[in-house]
Length: 241
Image (cartoon, rainbow, N blue to C red; front, side, top):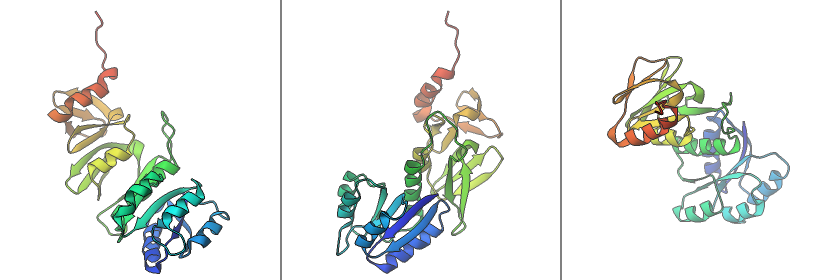
């Protein structure tokens, strides 16, 4: 669970972020305030992992606030002005959300923070390595254990996630977002519309990959063939004679 706070001088902005946070199972809102100076004080009284921080505030700007806390916790900037983006990333913010902030964009930033605050140790399969995905049903998030994903199929603005339990979960994401979030060593892109878990491969035949737990075959596109086969290279046994 990630403990977070919201600092924004406009109450309606706080209300929207509060709603988004309450819809996100891995976020816990400790408090919110319209006064950044109060936020500084409370930051020293609580264990805070993440701050949703406005940029333009009368008593202290968000950039000044970041400099004052000196890396004490992660920050996601929230603002109506895109011109502060570069300065924000120079100060190592997790993400930069432009108002009005949709839930889909919010959850993307929140998952990015989750991957930074609760990282998985390389080379291990953590029991708590999971993601939450937004479904077609408004306000509904589904938890998916990464170790359960067999392959992912891109469907324009949606993806279909196939699990080893036989589930086919439709999520409001694109395949590129998932590719960036999932561990690169465990997944491979074989086609513009397909991403698969390499540990479930049972056979490669021509331009098709056959996987465990499914009768579906995943295609290998010409654009992705070389990179995919290079990724598989160390697993391919050949006669050295």
